[in-house]
Length: 556
Image (cartoon, rainbow, N blue to C red; front, side, top):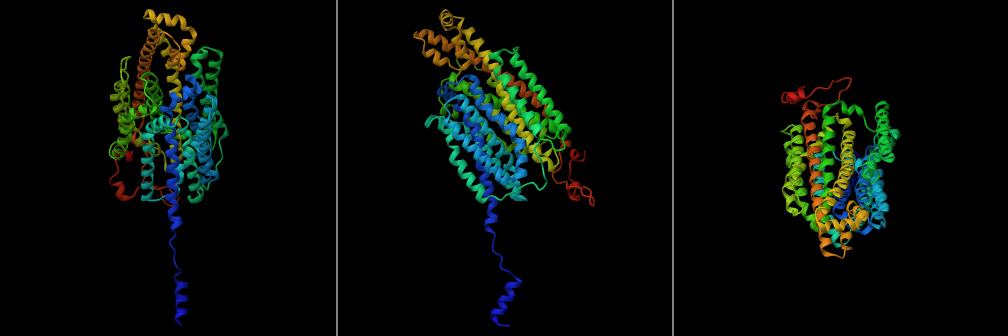
């Protein structure tokens, strides 16, 4: 055999193996795309808060309009989250993820170009749809691209990115708003979104669920509309009267449609939300913790921002800097809590974390008319520690209290409870805020002769300015300096007292969530991650070496 024949013979037996570098790198490109999109998504939640006062002045928005800037986003995110996951499974997660990026980027552009509050709020709703699509498919893309130990590394990087986005959000929002204007908190999403779309379509591997699924239209429509009617009733209650036909109709409609949603989910074979998940008390507890955390301290961020900027007079960047103690401590404590979760039962971390949040809110319920921003600092520090203790444990617990094959729906359900908590929390606290601040500011004005004169001349216009956040503009139109000072002082008295009341409500909500965590998040409800799936030939049995070390809770 000639030398050439020998080489040919060897090449046939041992074909050349070229390193599949593109395929190998695709998973890291998937992580980059997902982390970029998630960073943009979460950043857009936090940056908006510090820009709200500037948005109000620029678009001449009412207080209700400001609530909808946040609630329109949270509502659409909550409504579309579970359905978006099904769509991704059906049509391919990469393609659907790219569509979500496109919707988010285009709606961000429209937000930045908005010329009215209505236009901005509709665009924010569209942003929430894009965000839901991105959020619902992002974790599935990572899970399909990474396996074994690398999956843990990928999720660790993903968690660090999400924590970083929340931590620096107020600072980035303040810097953009102060330096370039509030519109740039939305414009900045456009080039980032375009880059993420390009990476997704050219570098990310497609994945889809091999099992056919269908969209639960009844559940989607009934849940979305009932939640919208509830929030609308809470936002409009003070203006239209809580006993008015409109408000009562909205509340009744919300209850009826939510009942339809529960019945539909119970009877369908492929529901949007599988109610069987809630047979485990731990799943109920984890969901209530997610709701309580969002409906308390996260919903309060809007009103704390208004206090720091509207009442204390700080600009957006200065306000963002003052939020750093709470956001950075949450970022620092989170990985510590994540490591402790393997040694300490989840209910103790969740319950204690929410209890710490409640204490932080209680410490912030001490401001008065002459307080500076440092009056909030002790509460910021304590609440930041509590948030950091709850967040990572909440995320891991949500998928640990259900079998592995249900982890996707459990994670989506937990995220939905978070968004519902923010939407209803902001609306509910807003109803109290509008009622209290008007009453307390007018009472403070009535306490002095100069204030009574302002009150007599202002009339209905002054009441509208107080509830709509236009007190400073109303004061600027008063020619008398003592009268202006009297109005601003009364507003500070009313705002500080109202903020204290809102904080007490958050204390109660957080404390109830803490009790639910201690009572319901039972360790025996957790599913051991090492348990293999049962097959007809081989029943589910833990490996011998793991069985010798399992805890009493696992044996239960």
